[in-house]
Figure (cartoon, one colour):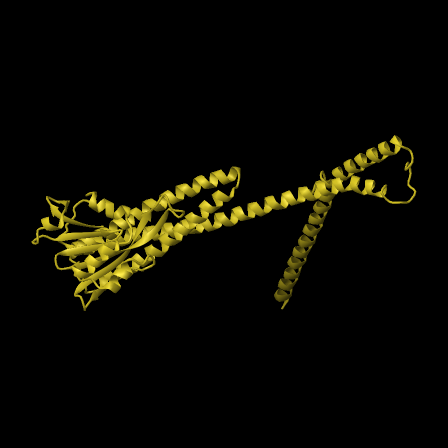
Length: 357
């Protein structure tokens, strides 16, 4: 879908194509583009088809260049996108910007909050006539949106952590994995935008005045802050996932240990009863109910003994072990103290020998 915007009294006004004033600068906003929109951009605005393919590539990196063949300036920057219906709700998309005559053309394969903010006049002091400043405002709004989304991801991860402290489920682990993917996308896009900001200052394709340079400095500060936040949150998520993996492994070991102990307890009556299935003479074999009672009571008693041996056994050191450890510590301490005394005596003897000389 292509919409046209012109500025009147400091605000962007949506207009139809036939209502556009040719003397004013026009923002051509192409979002969620279709094949018909691509045809219009190629035929009417003479945009290189290869550049349009770059704009529609979700993995395209930020850059700035000049197209000699079609005579226009080209920028590509990365924008954050929030899609609550997707598995990965936060990701990034490239925004293509074409500066050609009186047209400021933006092309994006999806819709995002940054573009909606511009269309809703939520950006103050916009000047569509100043194309470099208008492009820098897109970068500035992108950084502020990155920061807000990063904080939302951090809050969401904290909520999931609190739930996992009570019980761990596969759904929560999948949510944490999706958040970690979003952080990786954000970190990569922010680094790409940082390279674009550096080229923006050094390149001669777009001329910047002093106000634009000052605004670009503020954008670089926000972008670096967003990069540091994304890296910090990514490291925290990686550490947290490792910690929960260790917790899950420990819980599994505890369960397996408990199951092994019960298996040993239940194995005792099985062994006793299996003896009476052997065709050899055994005690109380022909005693009727007395033999049944004997086998049952002996199985229960041996099972109880096995339970107390394997299930109630404490792995902590007993009093004797503690005394032994204490004695070993004292003996080693005495040995170290004797060595220090020997060293002191040797040094004193050396000093006396030197004084006699």
